[in-house]
Length: 449
Ligand code: S3P
Image 1 (spheres, helix red, strand yellow):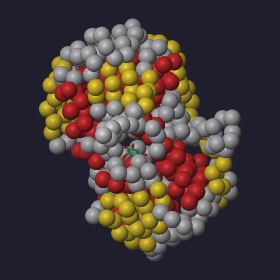
Image 2 (cartoon, protein in one colour):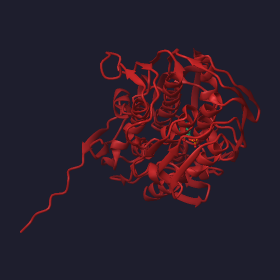
Image 3 (cartoon, rainbow, N blue to C red):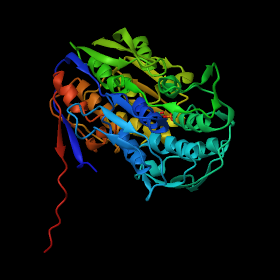
Image 4 (cartoon, helix red, strand yellow):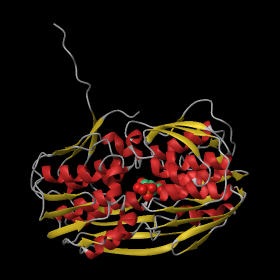
């Protein structure tokens, strides 16, 4: 566990320059799972250094995979995966990672293995009922602790299934796809609100196939996958913090290189454009079946908009930072349809509302969204709560950087959580001219008399 830290954000001038972002977290999880399910070795370049992705590595290693190169190679982000599956000797520790916990349920079912799954305090509060119910169609037998982790997965009889996912969850879809790949017969997974499609795009790289139609995915199994070589694009969700900061801080001009431009992930760029942001996107190629390119952002005055509710699955990780953009925009921004935010690493609707209100912004909260009214944030010396949630910490850091009156440094608590998705957040901003630093929290000292 990382040292408890506070992020200190002193007054910042314009952000300028060109930067890379870390490898995409969602795509990295999938690359590791598919490599572990394939026959033969795989080589993965630019794997995300996120702690969540490390959780997937730990879980796959406990299940018998060999993952080499992460600690020894000069290029720390490239790993070789040699598959292997066995019943684990202890619980599978999923850490903070919902993608690890949900996806491994599908993988265990596909491999006919049982295990106990555990998570940290935050993951143990998140709902596991929906993924278990979807996988029960494929034969999963699981016991949850009142709908949560710890979970006990019992080896089950895998079968093809038709399953409908109505909450727009890519993690549940991925777990179902892994089960469907190994099941005999044709499975169909439909979604009311389509979620990110990285698994579908990656399958052919490992020699697998599925058919995607408007409302769902069809998979005929059993299929065997073969080891592959693949490059992970830069994480467009990590880029979002730079994009918003550069839009808000006058005089900024930043280019992000090698960023994944999957249509399910770039909706936030379209939202920001509609708010008046100056964003140029140049597609430069493909990694596997994922488009990649450059994103250039220059500072602009933003205005509030109504964000379409049916975009929610495509914006799900960007609402905290879009809420910060809204706090500086002229007029009102409203988004609805995002009830899934209440079950993320924290309740991100409540957390965003609390932080924005403490910065003097008028926020109305609904069960499924926020209505944010503001024209800027002027308070100094703000101390914002990161709620132990990586995206809340990083969104708050941008809010502090973009304040208009910056007489004193601001602070964000639980800053160590940033490593869950982006251990390079601080150094990337520093390289663009942003001043921020991490300070370890001193343990409180008790004095006995
Ligand atoms: C993810 C899917 C999303 C997202 C999460 C990563 C994935 O969750 O919030 O950060 O890698 O599949 P959903 O399962 O709610 O779509």
